[in-house]
Image (cartoon, rainbow, N blue to C red):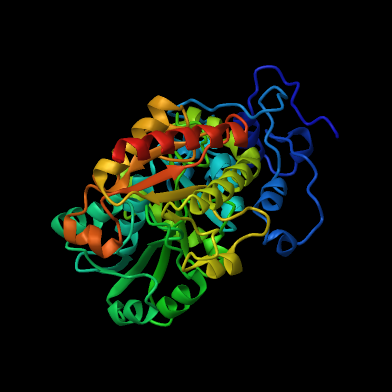
Length: 454
């Protein structure tokens, strides 16, 4: 590969870009600020059914001094060579697409690179990375809906999302939501009011009941009424690609599987470039004006983890499938989309990207909160099978009783409508230790739990 780094002492890539912009015709004396690996001459359609292949098609960002990892651009603000350049940047004539940056609340090179990775992962035109998953969801809703707007949403969504739609948006913005059973397509269709309902929102695999949404059909019926489809794909990166199945926007809490380390809070909005550009508008953009900005250091951390997300998801899913099968044989009430008796098993199989399994979460319904707590106590404190903690996607198994934790924002009636029983234990299956080692720990804990119940 030809060397493309500059040997001009004291002249930065930005200075070269500014000079090149001022002196057209002398481009040969200026070298690119970044250099990249050759890309495969294969049409993107060849990769559209495998997110890992889409990620591998991206250019590789090298470090400022030729490091194999990209540099972290930790600056809050950026300099220019000439005052006139600043004016041109604020009028939109020069921007990040030409390597011109002003302020990291707007755009940051390191965060933008992560956005390209997430867009490739989800098969969308663009993506913008935010400080949290809730920041991503809130920003999308506020961009797509105005005062008096209407949302139709699945009755089974993350508790924070439910609270946003039920309480915060009606109080502050006069945006109301109708909750429906997302598996009842006729009810969804009836709830969408043409020219008033702006968003149909649901999770690809719901939190915590693991209900699978029929993304292609739901997208079609929403589009027929002029409604945008927003899908939270936090539970199933790599497994499902909602945009390729018809959704308009995909949101993520990247704190979960994409991070994999339970040490970063982050989110993402993936969708059409026109939408993301409108969200970054100086006067009307929710991302621009609310400022849910991702830190460049967090972006760097995540960008280094995405390349092995596919491998991690396969192991999460493989173990979840094996444990769910064995738990079912023990007589436990198990919910897992990979089991053939799951109501949407065949639906998920028809939509899923091949080779990534059926998701890394399963649920065990212990019927009562007391029994659920006993099980979790023994799983953590007697056998070290997992950790009692919220969140998911960690390399250790995490478990929580959803009704009294991540879905506690819902009242009793709302929980019943969502199908959340008092004893539902949600488990995010990790991959540390050997499968048989961890299974023996589960057996020991379940034995002690049953002994204490009897």
